[in-house]
Image (tube, rainbow, N blue to C red; front, side, top):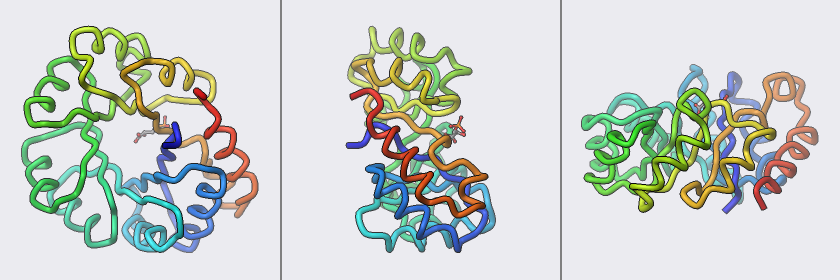
Length: 198
Ligand code: 3PG
């Protein structure tokens, strides 16, 4: 699995297919489309048709978000935190979820419900790699995908931990490159990201 999951905020559905193709060409196959723009569901629909990509929906907050994401073709969901209502909705919709946690108690509650792969969010603001390492001592069976402030500069610190499987970041699809249609530039960023932590 590629170590970096692009966190995508896409304003224009016309950018969806070329952006997904550019990231997949660079070796990043799992793509998180955040539900933070009016175009997001259409973007998921377009990206779901791109060969080689595995498209998920990020920023899931409500059961309605879960149903809309699933209907648009999302293969997985990502949430900044976790509530019982949201977990129930994902389980009912059969949508695999990466729920967010940033403390030992949050990780323990999700572990009780059977979740062993969690998003550590907001990663840098919650103590960064040192915090994940510390949580891993008593709870090694929980693995994390940190996001929020992860960058090429600090990604290796996270990816070097035994309880980190991958990391999420928005830097591989910067707004200026997306708006300019600089798909080759985005493929280059994706290729560099795919090498991180190897
Ligand atoms: C997320 O939703 O995971 C974060 O907003 C991504 O954070 P970044 O922009 O710092 O990579």
